[in-house]
Length: 126
Image 1 (spheres, rainbow, N blue to C red):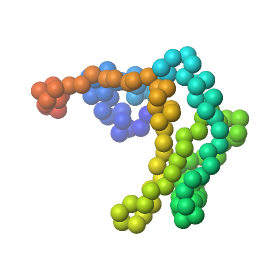
Image 2 (cartoon, rainbow, N blue to C red):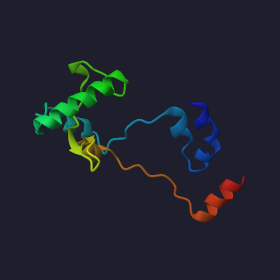
Image 3 (cartoon, helix red, strand yellow):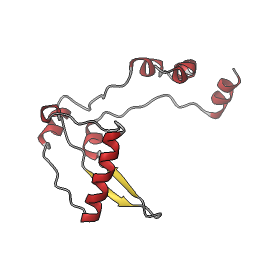
């Protein structure tokens, strides 16, 4: 755990998230069949964009690989695919969008205690 995160551990504890920060996060599935449902959908998606989008996608992917944002994995390591696509922003630059809808539908809802403004002010004063 990094020093920056460690410094705020007491605050994380006030919202019952200390274990989450210290141990890390593992997905909690909605039911025992969630992984099977995702794996049944396991198929390579054909890129449906224009040639320009494909070119920009390839450039962005190469940059992400170089910066270790994404890493290559072996085919047997693949559990499911999340489709991605490109959109052009107003300033002319491109943004890659990850569609994790299928995955999100299989993940159990994650809730944590919400504090009102009085509790937040009290915690900030300590």
